[in-house]
Amino acid sequence: MFVPLRWLRETPRHLLVCERSHVRHERSRHASHVRDHAFNCRVSFLIPDCGIVPEAFKSAVAGLGEYYLVKNLSLHELVTEEFINTFVKKGSCYALTYNTRIDQDNTAALLPTGKLILSVDKDTYEELGLQGHPSRYSGKKPMRYIITLDLSESTFGPDSKKHKRIIWALKEKKPLEFDFLLAWHHTGSEESILMSYFSKNQIQALQPKVTFSTLRNVQCPVLDNNKLKGEPEAACSAQEFFEWLGAILSCVGLENTPSSFLSTYSCPQPSTFVEQVLLCTITGFILPEKIICLLEQICCYFEEPKLAHWISLVVHGFADSPVSWRECEHGFLKGGENLYNLVIFRSLDYWLQMAVGAHDDCP
Image (cartoon, rainbow, N blue to C red; front, side):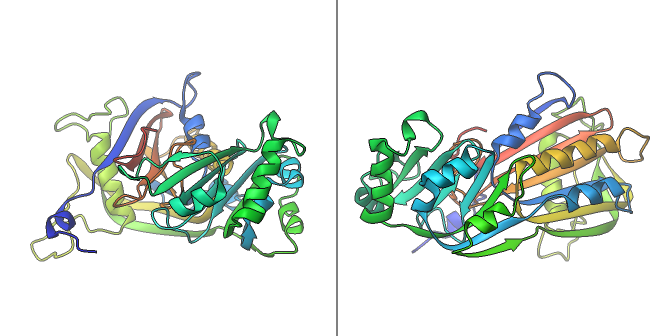
């Protein structure tokens, strides 16, 4: 496909939503925002003035738990009575198609609320014969459709006409098969139940990959927890910090030297040099419940005096997930933005920054 050079030079538009509150405030929405972002592929936390990994953080990271990759799983297996009663109604079940492209392939996602979201092309939609609506990314002539099936609703019983029709559509009329990432969260139950349930399929148990590193002599922006928009010569804004954080996580130099052909970016001002910064990066299929546990450890970290003024927790969603927050449709567009960042200050004030593509709904 021919792409005009002007398009390649343009910076992709994005939507960045920022808000400020206190972790312990009764109306704080940080936990609900974390829960609403179901599908997470990478979590990073950055601790200034820290060179040794705190034991509490090691324990939290070690307790992230397993997730599973199931190969060639028929989609109708996720809407059977047995699966719904075993996993959907007895905990939080997460499933996401693996190695599918949201703008080209059929994709599916099972939310912990029991909603099964299908994003399918026009031909598949017409063959299935299930009720849906055009994707917001389709343009004037819809070429992609979204189908939402609520597996937890009372009318979705095994003897209902609706359930029988969906089973028939997915099993006989237009069978769909995917590789799935699966995880299940339920207090008091063994995660390995998923392994035994899908024992007839090709299933693999996986652990999140964890890396720790120490960055030396890092130029960090000066932040004021009360000034989200910053203040000239006193504190950087939330947006400036977000851009700086992207540069740090992408290993982009901040020097802006004349000889640099890769980046002309420089650290926003005012700034300060920090001798060492601890960076932990976790990749895998990471559940919101586990991220909330990690967030609690960050809050506990500040119970005793620390050199660090803040800690940043960055969570990246899957670029090709059919949803971003809640059931909001997600599209790749140019960059597939689907992430959020929590900056927790010593006082337990926080900044929450949520970024999605320009055409996604506001989180």
